Length: 188
Image (tube, rainbow, N blue to C red; front, side, top):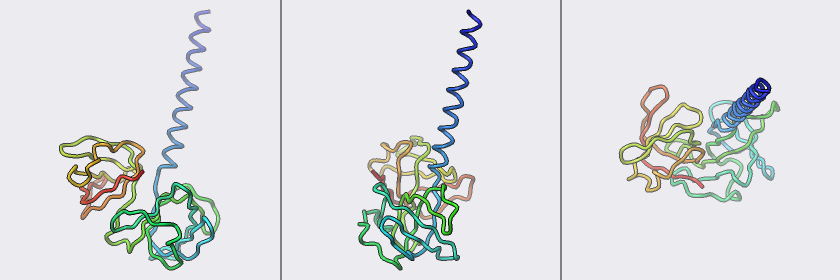
């Protein structure tokens, strides 16, 4: 009887561990954010097709109720009806896409602007409190950004899973890169 209980506990532990690992891997894949800067080439209801400014690559993005459409200079919301063919923007979307031409993916954010001094959209993976602010790692795990509390009053409220739009002047060429925000907007 004792051996049966131990065996049952081992099976349950293995099942739980594999389920948790699978769920973590699935969430990680969804949280990775890909970006493309370009122009809108078509708008069909909830699908917007973007052509890369520096290549012939295109992507068809599915715009949902939770897709952020933002002004790249100040982070303010932009109404979907404001988008037109020819508008320049940076699209942030899921790394998961269809194998069609063009590939289709879920749009996380569309940041309107020329891409030069626009805010950069990120998902927060890990947050550490630092003196006078917070430092977070994005879900792509390629950038640490420090947000001083004098830049964003609510910086100390930042948590894993949040979405942010950040501006910074330069990036330390480390692995991962590191930057200090000159402006930040924590998105709902």
